[in-house]
Image 1 (cartoon, rainbow, N blue to C red):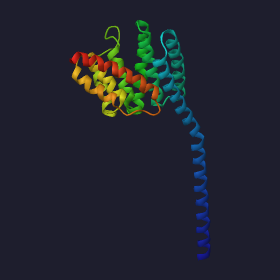
Image 2: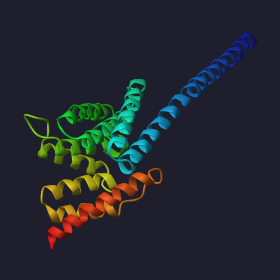
Image 3: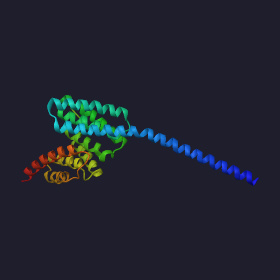
Image 4: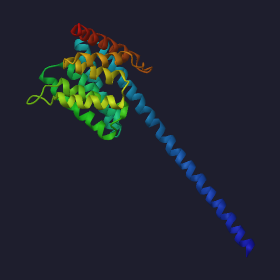
Length: 231
């Protein structure tokens, strides 16, 4: 009886090891199968980042608008393929909002509203994604879009959102620039200078040199306006 019991235990141990080994293999296959999807998504997001920077800072007029329209199509496709990706929604919102600013006029309002919806969707999925970029971008929208009855613009809401972005990313170039620019337009010049200087000295982003270079030019221009007002 003891030998039989021992044999059964050995068989059971071997069987359990086989199950565990099969489980590990199955999980490995699942992870390997999902890795390319994630890699493709990251590659697509990086492509949108680069495309946005090139279009925003290197193109002008009709060429810029045409490039933004192409980027909007690419961003829409990415959100359709990855509906649970907060960064995909954020970049879709950023591209649409920048296009709205470049296009101007009442025709741009529908793109501003679409950008708002995209950024709000990103916040539902992950409000801290991309260092709170959804808050920052949505704050800029609330500040730049006309108020009721034409649009949804609201300076108080804009400041609330920009401060949330700063709380998540207190040392970021974008979060500090956007709030500093907001304060400049609100004629709060001393506070504006503080945040713009912080933006100017923010750590560089190795993967976004073109965007950083363009942003630094905007920061320098804003600082020059502030310093004129403070003299």
